Length: 54
Image (cartoon, rainbow, N blue to C red; front, side, top):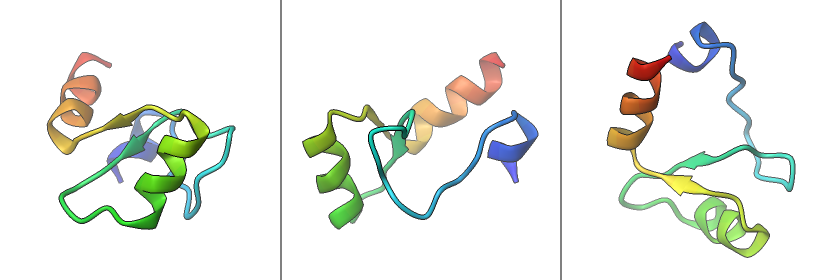
């Protein structure tokens, strides 16, 4: 898993402690929750760019 290889953790829920959310086209309620908590939301392309920079 790419996230774990970079020292991260893929969570099943969003909270104030979430660093950022990777959201696709139909992100749904997790996207809404991230936005309401002020958690940064990125797309897959931006995530892959971050991984490439690590």
